[in-house]
Length: 298
Image 1 (cartoon, helix red, strand yellow):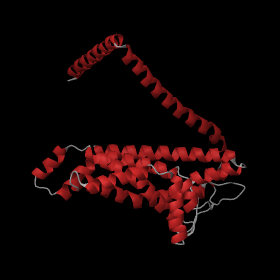
Image 2 (spheres, rainbow, N blue to C red; image 1 turned 90 degrees about the vertical axis):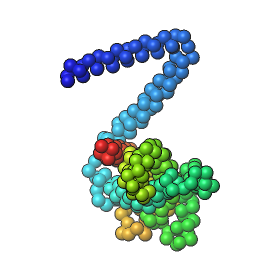
Image 3 (tube, rainbow, N blue to C red; image 1 turned 60 degrees about the vertical axis):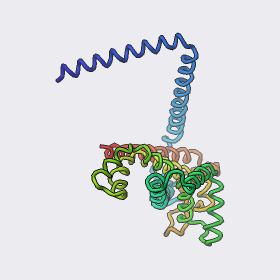
Image 4 (cartoon, one colour; image 1 turned 135 degrees about the vertical axis):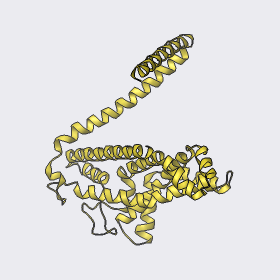
């Protein structure tokens, strides 16, 4: 068995070398292809270098100011603690996903699995979702302020901010889930129907588990948008530096906390430290979601 595997590896390496030599010959015959290869490689390199530069800049500026006072339970002008903002961020993210997640996933299931092809309602829903995705966050903030703070008379609340963010990320979750469901081969559905399963059972036991990695990718993008949002939350959740007693209380998230500290101009170093914590949270969320996707795929 080991000899067979070694033989296969040698054959694969030979094929790769042959393919590489063929590519070199094709590039010599077509200089435009070589130019496009250089441009694509350069673009990828610039993208990676930009990301590494941003990460290194944030770490260099923020890590030296990660002190114990920064993680105190209560915020004051001496410690400038980010702990209340961190807890508010977790609450805000959880509420927004609880509201927008099921709505977006079920809407995508309807569009892909139940709606008839060529349905005008489906086309209208997709156009509406694409339009909502392009609206600036400040417009969502003003909408949430007028609806929840003024019309409902909630003032600045965590619940109002979560509802505003749910409306904001709903099109993102719906579109990514829709594409994930479309990527599931029709043979899966046909095999399930052939074994006597109904449509509902097929969707929830065959199609959805196969589309989980794509759905999680959309949820990760939604979490990233929630965690990094400031404009929409300043008009709806407020900037109170504390943990609210209820969902109808005001509170700031980490992004808003970092913005306020930078805007005041007195705690710039602490704002960089907050950015480090925010970066670590996003990386951890991506890592955990990737692990869950691999486990579900297996």
